[in-house]
Length: 186
Image 1 (cartoon, rainbow, N blue to C red):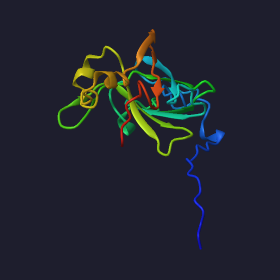
Image 2 (spheres, one colour; image 1 turned 180 degrees about the horizontal axis):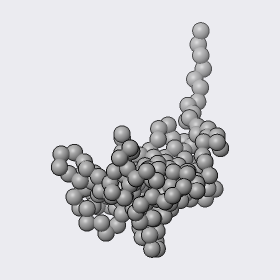
Image 3 (tube, rainbow, N blue to C red; image 1 turned 90 degrees about the vertical axis):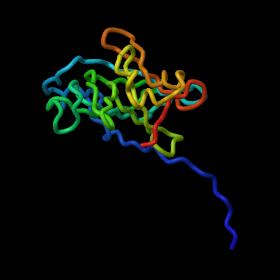
């Protein structure tokens, strides 16, 4: 018996609206009306753009990071959630409110510069994409083992947010093509 070939398809995303809570993009508190986390509050916003320059609507953007003292999990600020998620709007925009992260220990004696880890899930992607958001003009960026491990200055710059106001940063993610954001396999 001979079977005809079928077209390949990408998976999902098939996100249910209940996947997201009202304040899942606010890492500064564990509950909507809970106390604020310690540290400088910052806003990170940006746009997810496909290889043709079109916005990626309804992409799931997840972030996780250390608290203001560079601590994760059980050792971190009890008011800091450390994880957030949101869907992009019709124009591909997302926004997170968080605290400026502290540096975290890396391999050996190396310290990692303050950064936010980000993963993306979107239509047309078979796997999630993982990247990092670094902050401009941070002296620790020079010695960060991940950031300094990228030899090409242009590629490295795709991981650094832009200052757009007091305590406001923009980080656009380009999925492919010119200016493509650096992604990591975890």
